Length: 468
Image (cartoon, rainbow, N blue to C red):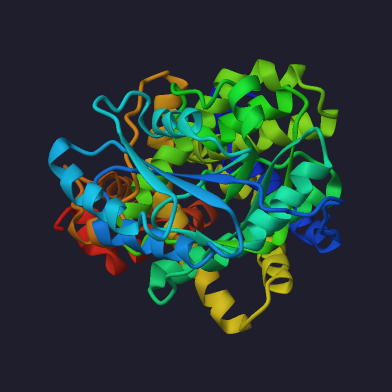
């Protein structure tokens, strides 16, 4: 086997094998989610104080007020204190002070202004944590709210099990109605089944969520000494550290956390780059802790697999580039030569889609349409995802940037030449070189990826072209 043939083989393997394994794994987990049985605590919630920490930075005052109004509705059901930690410039403090004063007659609410926003979000959470007095801590984003049973049932579980450190609820999108938020909502429903219901059913470790998790304050303060302010993805990092110390995280499927999904592609790409960087950074930084943890071998491997999920996309595009270059230089369609790998990947894709439709409730047509949308958008998102993964692998420091939503989403404008435009141009150039050689299989694969980028460009042209 000469060098070009070996390169072509390696390219096809990278192009299809990691994605096939990923799809099959998530399909199997999707089936296993049906075996989930919710736990109930042996001790009842009896009015224990829960400290709710709300980190804010240039949030619209309407969002903060809405969050406080939602919490006020629960004041007769749960005992809470609210701590707003502000990383705002001084000129924002007047409005925040007035708002807190307005709600003090209804809620036990205070705010803390950080003159220097050290540690970004994790630093703000630590400030709120060490200022809180509750036995339990809940982190809440201003664009989210939750079912009160997450507190009552969550505290009941936490009181009942000594080594249980946190309880996480089921994420749901509340702002449906746009193409993107609908697609995210359908995808999120299935991902929650895979990452939480299935893990719980199989006895694998569950990770906490950035918002939607109630913790034992003593574990956060005394054992972990708070969040690690050097990590962008604070929830995944916290999960690894909890598991390393022998603590577990429980999942409550019946108690929902309602979150706001991006409605613009530009917001979603910023979020996904941060998540890709954060997950990769955690697996690189905390690999030793995972391996040394008291988890089962299956849990350790699944944790590494989960945290490495974004690396799969980088490998796919490396494989695609190697396959195209080797095919053009060798005069052979390597995608056609190793057609069985493509067929295995297509079967995995079909199986994944079928399992998703079967395990989700609702209109099958609506689910299928949004499966197509999220598949196309995911192809386009591979551009910022690869960027985030490469930065993490090179240990380049990434500044924490909040996902623009609501008021900020409307005014958010991307900067510079979009990576998606460059990506589209490269795929189009590759297709132009492939077609005259009649590399049918490779041309079909290239066209499929190109279609996802073109669809996203047509639906969200201003976001990709940076036109506002």
